[in-house]
Length: 500
Image (tube, rainbow, N blue to C red):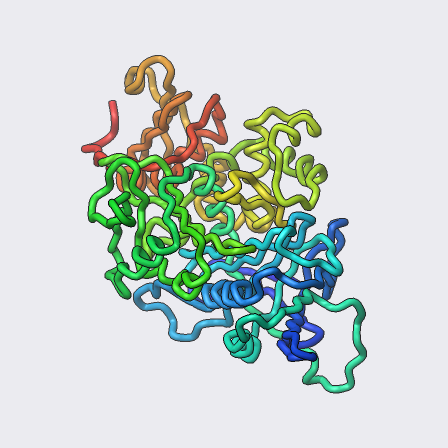
C-alpha cells in the first residue's frame, strides 16, 4: 500500500509511505542438512498485472548457494546504508526500504537503492543457475531482517540452499507476533533515482575487464574513506586498473571510491569485474559508472552516482523525454503491450504498438519515472519491473518538470525578439525568453545540438544533469525536433550575461 506523506528530511515535499505487510518473518532453518530460506513477500504484481498481497513466486535451489547468500547480504546492506549525510540533516532516520525482487522466466532479479539514492545494487540469478521446483512471474518486496542476515552469514560451505520466495498457501496463525507490519518512507526522490539509473545506463559502454586477481587487487587499493568531493578516474594499467585525479579518454569515473568497497565480501567468488561508463575525454565532468561483478551462477551490478553527495534523483537525464506531450499517452499503450520478460525489445515494441522508435524510448522514460522500467548494462537491454506505484504521482513530484509546467501555465515562454538576431549556431536554432522568478532568461533551442540557457543553473551544470526548467518549458511549448540525449558533460563555460 502506498500513500503520500510529507518527508521530515525535506519539509514541504511529498513522499510515499510504503506499508509492508508480511504474513511471517523471513527465516533460514536447517532441515536434514539443507538450509531452507523462506523469504516473506509483501505486495506487488503477478504476471497478469494483478495486485497480490503476499505473492508466491519461486521455490528451488541456486547452483551457487554461498555466493547467492553473500550477494543477498550485499543487496540488503546497500538498502540500509546512507553513503552521504547532508549537513544539518535530521538525526532521526526512518526505516530503509526493503529490497525488491522481480521473477521472470529468465531468472530472479534482486534490487535495492541506498538511502542517499547514490548507489544502486542489483543481483541477477539466471534461470540456468537455478534448479527450479516452482516459478511464477511478478514483482514484490522481500523481508531481509536482522536474524535472517545473521543466519545467512553463517551458511556453511557445500551446504545446499533451498530458496522459497513467498508461500504456496496462506497459513492460519494464532499469534499476532507471527505477522509483521512495518511502514517505511519511500521518497519520491528514490523513485526518480530508479529512473535515472536506467537513463545513465543507456549511455554506458564496456570500458574495462578484470580477472579475479586483478579485481581483488584493484578493489583492495581503494581508500576506505574520502572527502565528499573526491572523484577518481579508473584507467587501464599493466596488471589492473590505476586511478588518477583527472579524466582521460577511456577512463571510468569513480566518485566516492569507497562506495565500491561494497563489493568486497563477494571478491572470493569473483570470476571477473567489468567497468562501464559513458564516453570520457580530458574535459569531461564526473559521470555515473556501473561495476559488474561476475560470479558462478550470478552477477551483482553496483551503479554509482557522479558524486557522493549527488543522488541519482537529481540528475534529470530523462526530463527532456518526459516533456513530450505524446509520451504519457504512448506510455499507456506501451504498458499494455509489455510482458514480464527479462528484457524489452524496442524494435519489436514499435512494431506491436505502431510507434516510432523515438516515441517508444520516450514512453519507456515515462514508465521508468515510477520504477516500471530498468536497464541492464551487462545485457545492453531494458527490462520490465511492474511496481505497484502510480506513474502520474511520481511524474508530478519531479520538481524541475513541475516548475517547467508552471512556467508554461503562466505563459512565461516568448519567442526571442527579432532585434536579438539569430541564436549562436545559425539558422538551425530558435531563441526564446523565459520570465522566471522576476528575471528574464534566454534559451537557444537547437535541433541535433545542445540547447542552452542563460540561467545560473545551466551555467553550473550545462548538459551534465539534464535540462534546466527554462529549457524544459520551451520544449513543452515548442517541441521542435531532435532534443539531444544527455551524455557525458563537458567542463562548463560560465557566460558573462545574456547571449546575443
